[in-house]
Image 1 (spheres, rainbow, N blue to C red):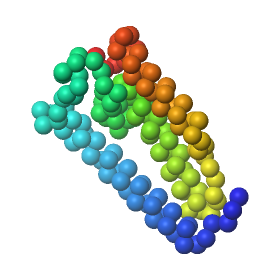
Image 2 (cartoon, rainbow, N blue to C red; image 1 turned 90 degrees about the vertical axis):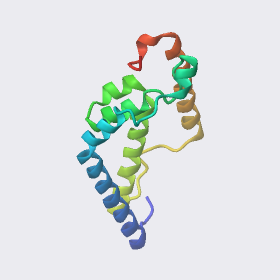
Image 3 (cartoon, rainbow, N blue to C red; image 1 turned 90 degrees about the horizontal axis):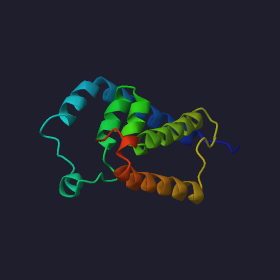
Image 4 (tube, helix red, strand yellow; image 1 turned 120 degrees about the vertical axis):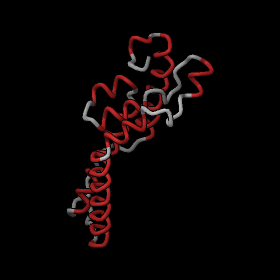
Length: 139
């Protein structure tokens, strides 16, 4: 474990506080965000309208709304990409918090194999859910 400089600790602490404040604002505004997402001002998926197929991002908005309301498993049913991104961001936030306290720890492994495997699994799921619609809540 390497030594964390005071300047790096201050920078990490400021980043943590800013992200914490942004998260609190999102939680406070979740009902307004949900209302906007369900309004006519929010566009439909052009890919789905033209082809009838689910695009790779179909369900991300609904998954994000479910996460804002604390329903992580339901969010996973809409599109597993969004909860996985939130998990990764949470681990990276944890690393930043630990850096602010002077400990440099890797909570999220960094490897190209993990990245490409994750992308491959998500892309395969995005294709398969068009043939087996019972595995998704998007329809």
